[in-house]
Length: 591
Image 1 (cartoon, rainbow, N blue to C red):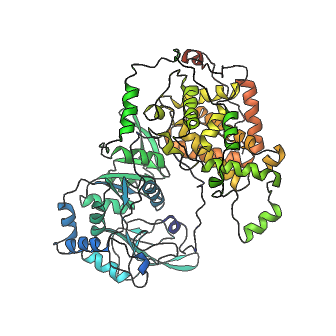
Image 2: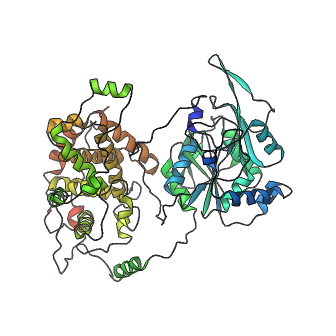
Image 3: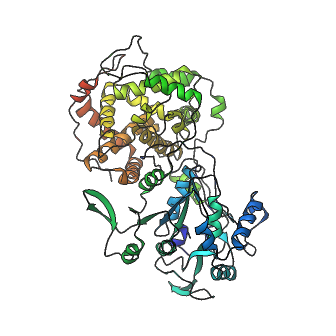
């Protein structure tokens, strides 16, 4: 049983939903990496059709197989017994908590469609315009839902009033909706439930793990019926407690859900919106077996493993040609990028009142700078190309600058995860921002003052307690920069500077440094990662000029005096370790 976040705040349906090309919220993976494909999988399990809510467009091509699953369960004595007796290698993950947890579950399934499939619940509420029958919910009438509950098909169910978060009942109260007064108006309750046939059908999909999103009361019912699996409780009333020397989250005793949480005995307790922690736990319970890698990958790994050790102080027999920022910029300025240019979306589309307000009060980018702006978004559309030697040289330059290694590393391998990519192939992380992320990283590694800053950030990313994937972080900040450029938050800054690329480069570097300051000063860990990224974005967007001004002042005071060689000779680890830690400005907050 899952409920959308809109129901937590309003009893009325929204009339539409927009989806920007680049999301305003960015997260990255902190868990041990696994190979995943990108084929989307959704559980559209069989169910009684609602009266007038479904259409011919909602009929799935797997209708015959779904009907077979329903008939098999219908012939058993009870659906629950059939579900418990069925043999399956599929892992069950139950995520329970307030209504907003469904958003987190959907995000996890969309990011790893080959590993997770969500069990779609039944509901008696009306279908909204943007929803699809069988994908978002199985929409049924109240009489049909009552019949499913009476027949034992619903292995968990509850009745709730969407506008009242606390009005949750773990059992069916009556055949008629419950009514309540809310701000002078009468609101009615809706039924939600998870069907045994839906779970059974989800297990037949080629995914190693199914996810059931339920309320806390629904999770208790699943636990009592011995469904099995892993239970994760996400709740706002949690705190850190030490258990056998290990810090873990636990629900506070003052919480109204404390007794029910004690009855559930969840495997893990997490704060609300702790998406990264949930993702890390979910990926950790997956089977460790992986599909056989291709021959090119095996040859690259074998070549890398033949090297006994990599000593940073050693020099290679051939001189490696580092790629400078100017060389990369010239490459994109002279290359034929017309195919990528036609697909860019440089500005945010506004309509209605927003368009009028922006026309009157907004700041638009000067026409003379629009060509440079288009190049910015065109680079983001350029994908990594193995046939272009310059692309691999850029990756090699980034790896050598950060680690101090003086030996070439292969195209594929675990060494890319050491500098913060999520996969053994860094190109898989660049799908959202294209080459623009590497463009920004190379910018920070092309001058003596910024390379000192990046080395300190890299050292912090390797810390035992405060570690984070550096390159994945840079990709997220590049996405934030693209959003700020697209909605013309940076238009005033670019107009003042009379340039786009250098302004956006400094905006990226200043945001990255601000993340480093907050992360280091406040001893942040993976649980606060999403919050820190949002805080940095809010600071940067509120006053980009102030952010960059303070960033330059910090470079001048704490980094510029400690010159590190940035020619073909990279400093060794010994040289880097002697660099004093930078001072973090006291006025690091901009709100």
